[in-house]
Figure (tube, rainbow, N blue to C red):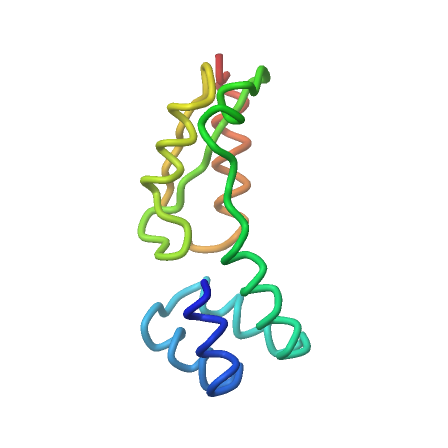
Length: 121
């Protein structure tokens, strides 16, 4: 994420988005193309830098979750690896892991809902 922030700061959001869309075509690229130009470029760079220096929850914190939980992984997502989702699911007691190949953002929500309805515990 720090590398993405550097790229955005160096060449600008439009050119960086062009590269991302070329490298990762599909609905995610379409979503980013629609949303990121609406934001202040300096704000995007600052947000990416903040995320780069913020760690996700550790296994101990995940292990303390005591609620029915479904972790949804997006197959092939280069920014949110399915391996991390699997680790999170293993770390949360009784959690269920669902991996989807999504064609739109709604697919992720539908997968989470379907997995939750089928029961996480």
